[in-house]
Length: 175
Image (cartoon, rainbow, N blue to C red; front, side, top):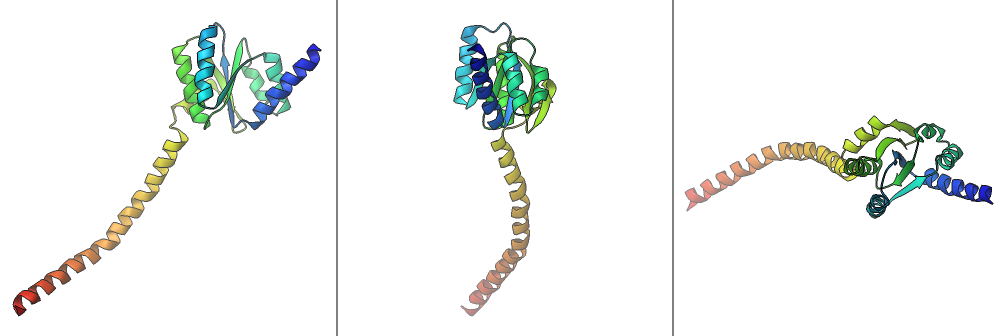
């Protein structure tokens, strides 16, 4: 019976990891239950799934989905967070919680099929969100185009001003 339950738990974890774009592994030793509840509640609002897991079950699930490298991060009490809008926002949110609750330690993660170290996760957390990056990209693309249009329209504007001045002068002379 216990073996069947463990297989079900491993299958559930594997399906979550398989469908996740990114996951972050955290050390979770010494975290109070009330703090854990607050973390779950806050992360749930951001569409982040946060589970405290048994290392053996998580390791089997990681192996099942081809992420066996992540097994290196499973040392001591462990929590795994998956989901969010993008990997940077996931890392940023977890880094914020690790600052609020020192017992939470970022250990590393898996993003885009690649194992990341703790330092890489922290670097990822320092990046702007996907929306901010898209905005910066669009501004970067738009600015040269606006300058180009201005450069092409400036001579036409100057010509128009000269022609209006000539017309006005002829109208004054004709009156």
